[in-house]
Image 1 (cartoon, rainbow, N blue to C red):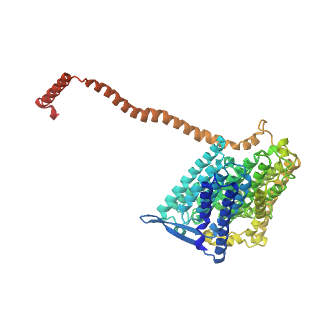
Image 2: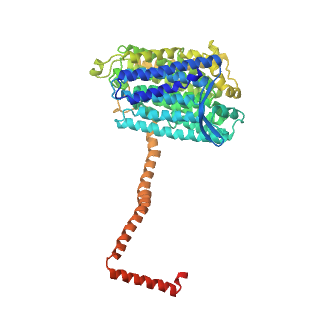
Image 3: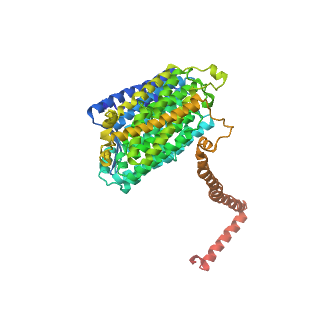
Length: 637
């Protein structure tokens, strides 16, 4: 199987080339078939690799050629597929295939169908490159590649200026984080003389806890993760990225790109374990992001914006898990989140499709009898993300909260409060969309219909995964063996040896589970009373809101704050440098020299009279001047 691993990323790349070149000549059916089939084959190969690693327990590290050789630094082009990356391959190709299949129906009437599938295939290629690389340079190429593809996909409908602005915003904010990642890679080269995982991680394991180089490296890498995974303060690009087509939201902001930061830290786990100060920062930033985004999601009225802030919040949970040493728990949540959040985004796309492109939940309602498959699947996704057993989100979120409790009671209390908010705003979204009376136009109601099978089949598959996906991580206290923890043990072995085993008493674990489930159910009941049974709807934008509600609805004015303290000062500096330094200084100097040359030339050209007598006169004056210099010794001066 090893000799076929290179095909896993190459097949989506081939799809990009074929669909990109044939976007105007191939039919939509052929384009959709090629784009989806190649990702499906890649998924099949990923499954085979996964079972090979599961059976042998040995990672696959293949060097294809020597890539860069500068002095002592040697960087091969090599792939590493171990327990961690094999699961990521399944997520990227498996969920990616379902999103490709969904896109056939969702984008069928779009004129850019071929271009869209080419971009999707290219995105999958770069994401696979990111997780398969055996060193930080290949990871960084994939990292930058998915950033480029996100720009192309978010701004896919670029004729709308606001959509184009959202794409630019995502691209620029990611570049800020990427600079930190790149500096971290340079520092790794300086500290270890290599960037290959097989060489640097064993060296790092011999270093003492809290060493300065590791602190600097981990902080810089974390800056990259903050940008890519939309954490405070670089999170505002992700909600705006909802401007892209809904399949883009599912692919980029649920299952793949935004989890790249979590994958990178999980891959670098020994660095972070030996830098406890950085881990504390990671946990605090993650917890703050989870809470902050949840507070914003409480009042949003755009169905995709609710899910966008929910993604930011869930990513915060994952960083909380990483920060408290729950590496397996954080990655477990990556896995379950890929299922239920992709489901919810695609379900939202099905709702928008049925509502003739309407995204405002205030204009929906009463849809559960009209689009039954969409409602049933979104209900499952909502239960899963709310952390209600036995669906997948319960197991992964509970593991993170248990580690948070062992680390800090304060972290746990804030985490549980955020879980309660999550349950409330998700069921609020469900009830506003599917319960009560229909609040849209008569034309919208007349055209309400369930999505085609190409869209509903992925919903059903993801709903099943959202229901059963958590059973790979059932804790021992509930009679399970946490298969995922045992499978990933070799990846986190050295970190777990340093951190020590995490054990809570069975009674304590049951109490913690009961609390998290209890608050989720309380929030569900309150949301049902207010929005399901009571039929309340958020006020219109023209009406006045209470102060706290307004603050949440306007996203705590973070964008406006950034606009005031960053964009406007930069605009002022740009204007100053343009008008003063550039135009008056640099241009003034260059133009002044040019103008002086022109004006002096105008004066000197008057000497060219064409009169021979005048030329002889000038020659005589020159001879007299030379003689004068010679006689009076002026040449010695």
